[in-house]
Amino acid sequence: MYSLIYQINLKDKYMSYLILVRHGQSVWNLEKRFTGWVDVDLTENGQLEAKKAGNLIKEYNIKIDVYYSSLQLRAKKTLKLIQEILNDKKDYEEIWQLNERHYGALTGLNKDEMKIKLGEEKVHQFRRSWDLRPEPLDKHNPYHPINIQTYKEIPKKFIPSTESLKDTYKRVINFYEEKIKNKINNKNILISAHGNSIRALCKYLFRLNNNQISKLEIPTGNPLLIILNKDEKIIECKYLDQERAKDLVAF
Image (spheres, rainbow, N blue to C red):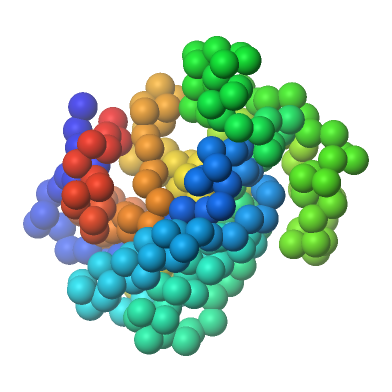
């Protein structure tokens, strides 16, 4: 196993910075609830995490050329707070494909209570397995995305009632290949998204197998800096908050 803080062939000339930031702590993170597509806000601590992320990026003096966020409030607010710290008023693009994984019928439920009801192993499978989907969320449930104003512009055929990480991976990588891939040779990019959408992107970039990705944890508000050359080869990769990265393992 290798730490997420690793380097590959430092003789290669890097061409692009890619910074991935999971949003700061949300209200439902704090309450230990399955959130998914429910559009919740940041906690006060989550706002502080976002500002710290901005300061960590600022220390590296990286000029960001392109910003992306999911459609969800917690990711958008995290990005705006980072931009305030960077004193960068550049527009950013909101991408629904970067939304968090949909947790189906688990949405809104407390994770600890579900461990008691279903068992820790089953909850772990729902949270970390590659292709296991929870039961679909009823479309009459107020937490279903079709009933949330944030998603009214997304064609209904794309709105899920439940997802596995594999499902999330497909939409995230479709976005990456359409929007990001051709920018790797000359642009610095920052993406504000979610634990599972970032895990999906890391699976692709780090070439992790289905077992390895189950071990990858993404902390809130800790920028993951990835330096890539024009061939998408990773030159260096590290979390900017080293204290919170020491226990994380990529593969």
